[in-house]
Length: 554
Image (cartoon, rainbow, N blue to C red):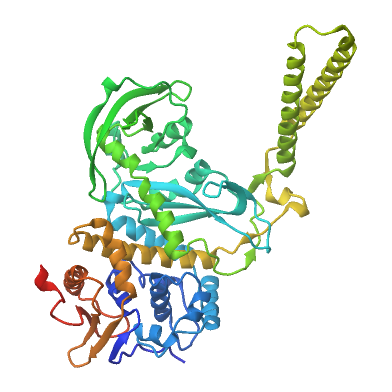
């Protein structure tokens, strides 16, 4: 049995057919590129191409889980890809399991990331790294706990380290079941990959000729603050940007000078900036410290090993981190990146190092004993400072003082024993060395990685459309909400076999102004001359009527 070929029939008011406006951007961002090299499906009605198109449209329509498809009209969604209906959830899960189990999602994701880096080498020159915790409340396995800043709690889960550009567009994600920390992930997982994949890096001869030239820059938060790491990266000629820990006294306001800065998205503002040089003598490295003076007098301190760009350019790179924070918030709200794809678990690599439970237990006991010792010492000190004591209370005073002193000495001895045991106990051990009761399994990665890659493609496609509309809309912040509105809007599908054209005529938007913006978007999309995959139809986009309602008002 061969997979079905897309067949389009004339249809009016097809539900959410506006999502077809995203197809040129999806294809441009590699939805179907390399897929045949890394995935295959057994003979069946639904082929790999149809599956990828269905999944990407489902993501853009804000259906956040596979189960959510159960409550959609399968016939209406099927018409978007030239089929009589999309597969039911059970069939969809089976095919996803085959794709992720028999295929190579990691290889596909790596190829796409390399392609995205090559598509825009300017944005690839400065990359943003940040961790995002996906909490897990299931009962299949007891994952290690970690601190979740948005919840202000320690919860079980996994940590995803995302790599984005200055506009917030993702390149790839590294998942850590055992969180070894940002610095370790950058050293072992991220930097080696970037050295191999980032295009247009300076050659060795250029680096030798220019002592301050660097290959690319990495921007991260205070978790990655480490003068030793800065030195390690600079030895590879990689510039680092982060906030400074332990910033000293405020600098005089007279040192700050107002500068005009332009962010990657084109936004322009003014900042009061100042700069000094900082020497870390122990690590033998000199860095630039740049401070931004806020309107309330607060000084934000930045550290960088970028010795080439001017102070305003460095400030832009650091303060563009908000784009990645917005990315996490948007992806959780609209794309459901925290949702599980399946409930399967797999064995942990036995060579992975984990925190020794005995070491953690000793740390907990030391903290508890130290707290008790602190309180007893405070009580003892308060007793001594009470002043003159009446004769009848002297006996009670001496007895209480003796008891407190004895308790303090006992706690000090216990604390010393615990600290000795802690020094003799390894902090990290191999996973195989854990006691059987302490061992755990990890959530299966392949299915999640495949769906996350589809979501990255969808987000990049949506962002590409947003960037097109930003050239036309008066309020640039409205562009993304307008794109979402386009996806959800019904449209007419009109195939013309003789001329080889597939017309997508979207219904009118909520306002005449938005209709005019959509008309401009149609002109840009039509210039791409996109062919619908698996057919000879060239896509033509338009509004339902040639006359834009309310156009006279303009």
